[in-house]
Length: 111
Image 1: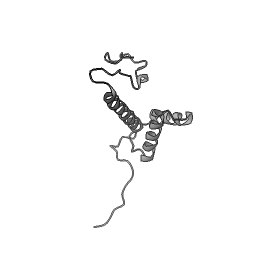
Image 2: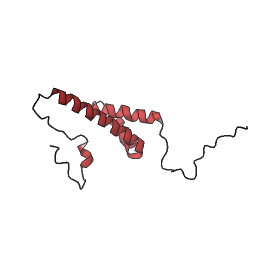
Image 3: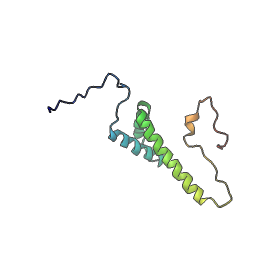
Image 4: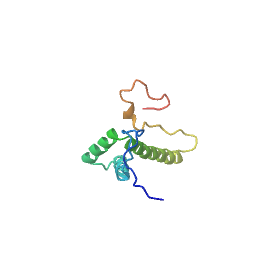
């Protein structure tokens, strides 16, 4: 059986706007997201993160995953630090995403 060379051209059905992202780029998005959360991000890094998030769906998904993990950890450890019988105060994580939205924030979230 002869080995035919593999064709790396996109198929006719391939979506030209969707392409596999370099894992190094996604790792960089993670690093920048954690630097932002830790308030250790420089203005140049913030611009880079902003550009990556504006230009790539996978980068946005990676960023949201990092922020969700951060939020989940905050909630977990805050809940364990709240005395029994009291209710923890709620915060809006990424509240800026709702700015300019025609939909009001959830009723159960306090500003």
